[in-house]
Image (cartoon, one colour):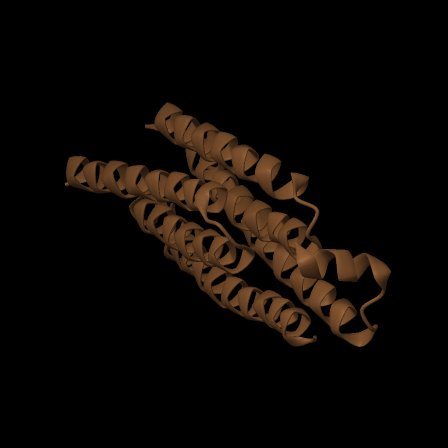
Length: 97
Length: 96
């Protein structure tokens, strides 16, 4: 049973790390700020989600696993609101003549 | 298993550093603000992996704190931006 959990952890953490790479590549290559912001927050969040998913079987206790999920939930909420706020600032500044 | 986590954490830190290098060099304030977001997420992921590698559950709290700091600083930045009117330095950013 543990080899299955370890295999799942390997795959999930690997995909999470790859997504971080994709997020950063998106950050480097995209033309304007808004698309960079999009690439940054979306890919990093999913990368973090996959890493948390991969670490769940390794967590010592149920509470530890729950705290891992809380980290991901906080990441989702904070990144979403922060991106909206930053995009709002950018949009307000661009819309003024 | 543990050294694999450490390797993954190292990989994520180098990728985050690469992104930081690009984001911190741009002159647009908003992009420099995104560095905080990048550090929050990348740092939290690296800390989580290192916590799993050294099997110390306290690292999850560190990751929680990092995420919270990133969110709060972004909110502070935006509330600071919208209150004062655009002065000369911001006009330069408008063209950028």
